[in-house]
Length: 311
Ligand SMILES: NC(=O)c1ccc[n+]([C@@H]2O[C@H](COP(=O)([O-])OP(=O)(O)OC[C@H]3O[C@@H](n4cnc5c(N)ncnc54)[C@H](OP(=O)(O)O)[C@@H]3O)[C@@H](O)[C@H]2O)c1
Image (cartoon, rainbow, N blue to C red):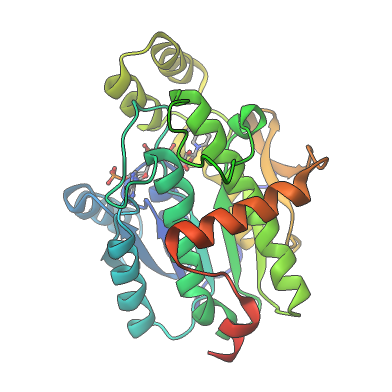
C-alpha cells in the first residue's frame, strides 16, 4: 500500500513551523498538518498570498489552528525577527519544515549580499534552524525536514572561496548548489544531533516534479529556454501540489521515518513517497564541513547542538 495523507498520525498538541506555507508545497504541507490537529506557524513572505492561503486551509479545516509570521529568507534581519516572535510564542517546537525556495532565477543578491538562491534556499534556513534549535531541542523527538530537489544531483558542493558564484553565475548552477546545500544541511544536521545525543531528528525530502508556482516564477523571471521547457514539462507531467507535498509530509510525520533518511517519489519525479537511498557519499564529509564553515561565516550563526540544548 502506498503511503498517503491518510497515514499522517494525529498531530494534536504539536507545534509545526512551515516556511513558504502561502503557496505550492508549503501550503499543502501546512494544510495536512493542520487538518490532523497541529498548530501550524505559517512563516511566509507575501502576506496577501498568506491571507488567501489561510482562508483556503480554513475552508478545508474550519478548526485549523494557524498563525502567520512574516519571514523573508532573503534578509537575515527578517529571519532573526521571525525566530524571535516564534520562540516568544512557542518555547517548544515539534516540527520545522524548511520548504521555501526559489529556482533558476537571474542573478540577484539578498539584502545581505548573498547570491539569491543560496541565500534564500539555504542560508536563510540555516539561520532559521540555528536560532530555533533551542525550542526544537526542548520538544522530545522533534523533527527538522529540509526540502531539496533532484537538481541536487547536478549541483556542486559550495566552494568556501566563492560561495556566491561571483563571475561564475548560472541560474541552474546556482540552483544545483543551493539544493545540494539543502541536502548536505539536512544530513549534516542529523550528524550533529546524533553526536550530541539529542532526540531531535533531521531528514531530507524532495517533491519530484510538482505543478506549483516554482517553474512559472523561474520562467517569468528569466525568460530562459530551459526555464520555459521546465515549466511546460511540469504543467504536462507534474504531480499536483497535494501529491508533491507527500514526501516532506512523510519525512515529517511517519513514525517509522528516522533521522538522516531521504524521502521522495517512488519513480524519480513522480509517484507515492518512499524512502530513497542517500547517494553521492564520496566527498560528502568534506562538502558538509565546507558548508558548515561557509554558513557560519556568512550568517554569523553557528549550529551548535550542545549549546542549544543548554539554552
Ligand atoms: N515544484 C517542484 O517541482 C519542485 C521540485 C523540486 C524541489 N522543489 C522545492 O520545493 C520547495 C517549495 O517549492 P514550490 O514548488 O512549492 O514552489 P512555489 O509554489 O513557488 O513556492 C515557493 C515558496 O517559497 C517562498 N519564498 C520564495 N522566496 C522567499 C523568501 N525570500 N522568503 C520567504 N519565502 C520565500 C514563496 O513565497 P512568496 O509567495 O512570498 O514568494 C512560496 O511560498 C522549494 O524549496 C523548491 O526548491 C520543488
